[in-house]
Image 1 (cartoon, rainbow, N blue to C red):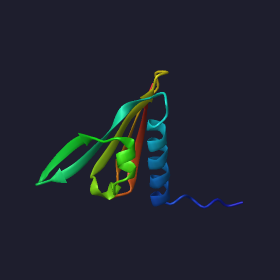
Image 2 (tube, rainbow, N blue to C red):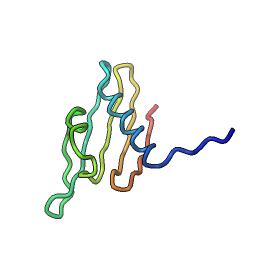
Image 3 (cartoon, rainbow, N blue to C red):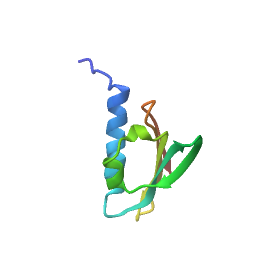
Image 4 (cartoon, rainbow, N blue to C red):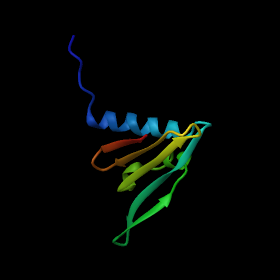
Length: 92
């Protein structure tokens, strides 16, 4: 049986959804940071997971999930929306 590889866009959307879900869990800790270019400068700000869902992610140059849980797990997931690229880092 041949498995079709998942497209980069579909993988991007799946991973983004997984991060939003992880950050909305009861034991989640951390923050979501968005980077957007305004007047030639790259600005960073915190955004709530509900607000991220209600916005066009392509408005941001980069989205960083600095996540974890109360059990001590820590991870980062960086998304580049316009390129549909993402990178996950688990911190042991």
